[in-house]
Length: 126
Image (tube, rainbow, N blue to C red; front, side):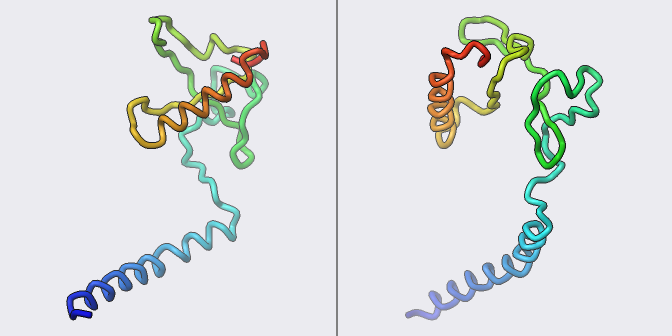
């Protein structure tokens, strides 16, 4: 083995060691304190929402805080405007992602189509 290859292994080992010293204690601390999810979520805090109340919809709870998506308005492929008002009283899944990303987006699109097809005959699902 050449001397240059030995330096490469030492460099890689050093990087792994530094990573371990810096990040492993932080990871262990978050796991031991049951702090896996953070409050820095982009989800809207329903309790601070002046436009609605907690009784408007069933909310996803992250930690103990009920969350909901912000109001939205989009144009579909037929030129129709779609908003969250179109789905009042219904269960719906919202996924905001790029349709042109080549990696995970096609898989996510395919999985959401499967969810849509499974629930299309239920009137309470949008």
